[in-house]
Picture 1 (cartoon, rainbow, N blue to C red):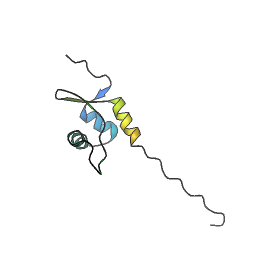
Picture 2 (cartoon, rainbow, N blue to C red):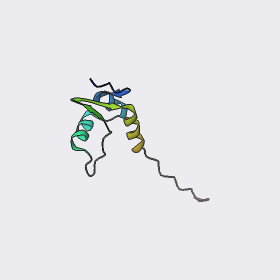
Picture 3 (cartoon, rainbow, N blue to C red):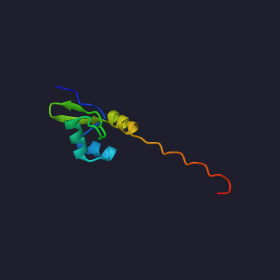
Picture 4 (cartoon, rainbow, N blue to C red):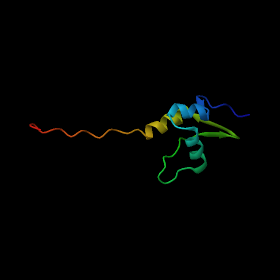
Length: 78
């Protein structure tokens, strides 16, 4: 018997945690990385059970974090 993954979420919980649809998670598992599409987070599969460890979800969020572009300084008199 496999030991449960600690701190792992179901598909539904993971989708809510990273604010994506369950469909996105399913498609990313089936299709993998596709050109022009954001890859989904890593996951754990044990038979038919799919779990998303919080560590993998947090890594995925960090990889997709964006930094806003700096605002150009205004010249005096503008």
